[in-house]
Amino acid sequence: MYINYTDQEYVSLLGQGEGRIKLNHPEIHEKLEAYLKKYEDHKENAREIIRNL
Image 1: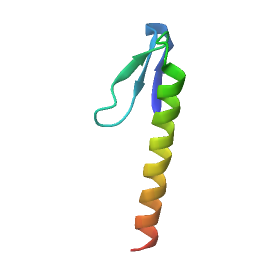
Image 2: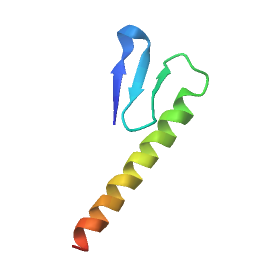
Image 3: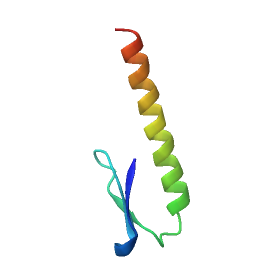
């Protein structure tokens, strides 16, 4: 998921190459939504791999 550093005014998106984004960035909601969708997609792919073992 992501780590919320509200005291430092940014959130850190976990994962290789994800980085962090400032809370006042104009596209923060879109970026967080896209990140969460990608995270859920990766979880589902992992579940599918495990089911097929």
